[in-house]
Length: 414
Image: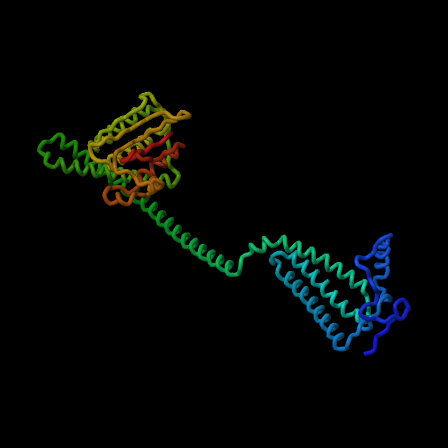
């Protein structure tokens, strides 16, 4: 093939392996750099200093068109990729790290432009424009690398598709369990509401006939006391009277729960000697039980401002539990002492079977009974619940602790 010849600055030159001899490093002395920069931008689109690439070097048609078509194909792909990325960003607003995608779009567009110019230079030798585009490409490439490096920790933390699917499944299971729990809770609430309704109806409906029966038994007891000939039936009347008293106490508890649930638990507060009240309560409870020794310790002059009957009810409940769950002829201790802010603490300690630690948190719940005692001892699990509500209505505290290795201490502060 013949050597290709072109004009550079209107001087015929032969283009071959090297058109000019350049020294390394370049010489920018004596203001040459500034001068060259000004000249560069002044002649940005001027192509007179170079021949077209077709005419610079010994290009065969196959080699030249292979170069050109490859650059055009790369340019087409580089322009298609940003277009697709732009569509992704436009359609999916939730895509992570959108800013880095915009940098990629700019970087890929400029890379594609360099390949397009490389192909055009075969006819239009715009080497200055090509160099400027490459500078912009280099700048945005560096920024992209820096931005991507800063995002690496967040990218590493991105969860895989399997992890996301596992999380979705876990959430589905949690939601299903939550729905199941809600169904159980609703069923429990409905059951409790039905219990409350039953208690309200039963207590009110039973109150009148029980009162009538109790009054009749009291009349019979007075008659028996005056007639020795009827002594043979006296034990049966006394036994019936005792059971009626238990039934009356149960109905009173049901009525108290009904009032508490309706927010109608009323207090009639007054100042009274709590030691005297405790002594009377102990005497009353022992008259029914008579199998335990009870001691009372405390200042005999302690007074409290509270509802006498309700506090008596709480203490009576504590004593009844102590008698019920401790062996016969054991000691039950009632202790009354002043605490901070003018309050008084009353406790009842027994030497009974105790309460497991895992049951203490629920001991004051409505209808709660410890499993291993529910069949052996009578009761429906309302006494301590009512006691806790009475103390709460007084703005006090109630609790239970162990009494050493054996036994329990129930206490309240008001």
